[in-house]
Amino acid sequence: MLADLPDRKEGARYFEVGYRVRTGDVDQQMRVRLDAVARYLQDAANDNLEASDLGDLDPFWVVRRTVIDVIRPFSWPASITAQRWCGSLSTRWSNMRVRLTADHETNRFNPEAREPGLIETEAFWINVNDQGMPSRISDRSLEVLSSMTDEHRLRWRAMNPEQPPAPDVVAAPDREHVLRSTDFDPFKHLNNAAYLEAVEDELIAHADLIDGPHRLVIEYLRPIVPGTPITLRRVREPDQLLVWMLMPSADDPEVLQVAATVSVTRRPD
Image 1 (spheres, rainbow, N blue to C red):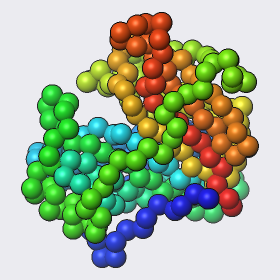
Image 2: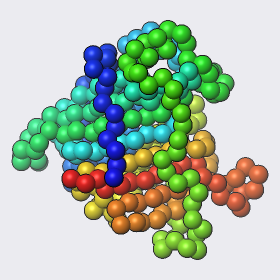
Image 3: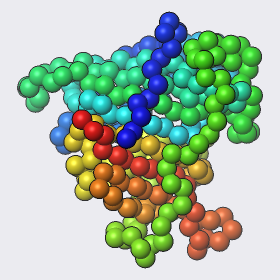
Image 4: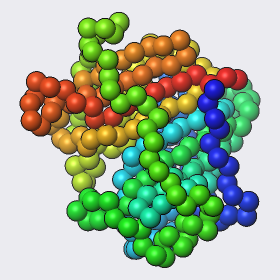
């Protein structure tokens, strides 16, 4: 049984911003893809920093994990509202919650009325310095974030299995996923949305997992830089797809190590 993400503390402040669902965000059935959700989350984080003085105090953050709970799927056309707040924190990292709601509209291509959409998300963000090393959150940022939650002793606990099975015991053979230059940001990091583009490719063969409510969990274990070859190892279970994104070890290119882990799980209606 998947536990719901924690709700916002009563009376806690939050940041709110709106977006539009565009045709580039959806699949051939007009469903908003998971990589598009990741872009909304990145935009909301950037907009939140720019709208406050926290961007000057703590400008560098990296995501360690993202949880996306699709409760009522989004589709095109729609207007999206994002509400962002701190769900829990410690002195160097925080769980940032984002609630996405969609007001669906109709047009000549999608004329049927649809219920409002709801996606609940949580991301484990680590504050880093300009060298990319974990760093203590500034006193002012701690004051602001702490006021949003009573959980001030956040600890990291993995949600996905980190170690992949051996390739000879899985039903599906490993496959290569080709990265493009446009998948990388100015810091030569693979964009968070690009990881989920690879997952969307996998879900074409597992549409039953995402036809209704579902949860995606992606955990980032090692950075992927330009020129890195990526291999996907997949395991399908009755209600879940597990994916390991593998890359060559720096010590031995013949040895694959885990760059990221992904699970997509069907939620009960």
